[in-house]
Image 1 (spheres, one colour):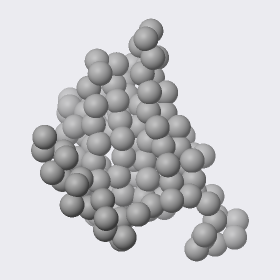
Image 2: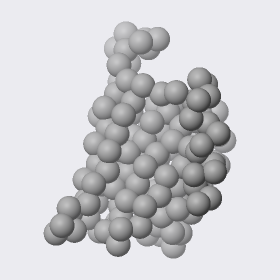
Image 3: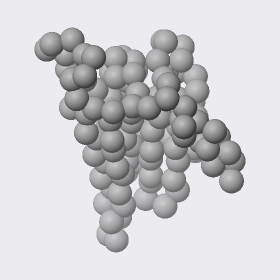
Image 4: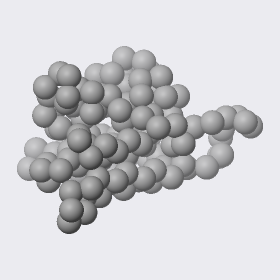
Length: 131
């Protein structure tokens, strides 16, 4: 599987470890859900608000499109509304889930000096991720 070959070499790379955890789910009736928990305040400025609590930045779910959970450079996820951007690229750009995930993680985040990864699922049980 192409995705495994992309992810496997990075698993032990210390530079790619993030503190945020997330999950996406699809229930038996077709409802989508996404959750993201921040990595905390370590090495963050006091008063900083991260991307986790901002809808569309680090987390997004819509039964009509996709559920997404992100981890990485929160400031860039906030500037791009990365999680929502996956849904928009699918709806308005006619990209597949995989193509939308790749576009955000491999092109849009690095263009602004950020990095990260995400997991996503849609109702037709199509899964996607990018690191």
